Length: 266
Ligand SMILES: NC(=O)c1ccc[n+]([C@@H]2O[C@H](COP(=O)([O-])OP(=O)(O)OC[C@H]3O[C@@H](n4cnc5c(N)ncnc54)[C@H](O)[C@@H]3O)[C@@H](O)[C@H]2O)c1
Image (cartoon, rainbow, N blue to C red; front, top):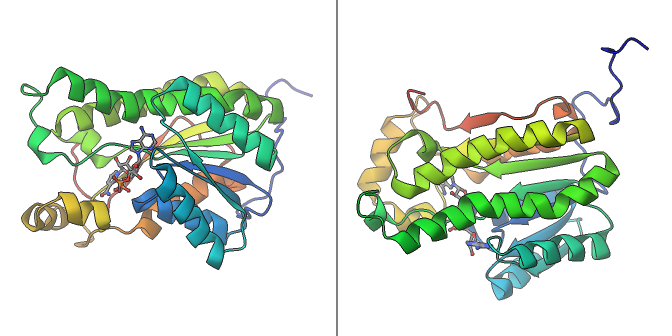
């Protein structure tokens, strides 16, 4: 075979999306957007690990989702910023479900509007946000990488944010760093058949936004979109689903903005 000919290790299945038999870990899935992503994957047949630092809430969420979906659900308490904890997450997943096909690094700390100033950011807050939003994604990826390498396949999807392109304190810094982490990890894991991409949502109408963003701030962000509405978990999942599917086998190292056309002036 000519050296440049395709020698793909994954089946070529065009646009077929089918998560039956796939194993998906979603971090930060006890509530909010992570919970919705876990539910969507389970609805499409995946076995899903609901992983969260709030272990009891993760257990309740997994039980709730299992009531209405066909996928198998397990809950795992994990602190994504702690390497012992992330290794235990990967080990438990493989022990109970046999493999890891998709890792969604969704756990994140955001929305502390009192802490938007970098000049006034306390040292400890910087470490906490960077520890969860950046190092957390790296540690979870390191933990699942040996299994994905053995499988010679895997999908890693990092949940970034439109905040990466706007002044938004340490949060924005952490999400832009996450985009670079995505690119660099993609180059390391690509030869093993593993893709790494990021999805950067805009303003989403969910419980965290309602809790943390004042209505005037939300209205301003919506006015800045081409679509003139906030996004939904389902809008974001459309991209996650694509990146997790066989259709995206040759897509890696990219950050995809899903923000209704918000002008971030990249
Ligand atoms: N909601 C939005 O509008 C929006 C927009 C852009 C990006 N995002 C990103 O989407 C992700 C989810 O946001 P959300 O709105 O659902 O937030 P959320 O605060 O409702 O949920 C975050 C989840 O992460 C968990 N978590 C926090 N620290 C953790 C740790 N150390 N280890 C494990 N789990 C931990 C929390 O317990 C919680 O369940 C975040 O990464 C956020 O930055 C959200």
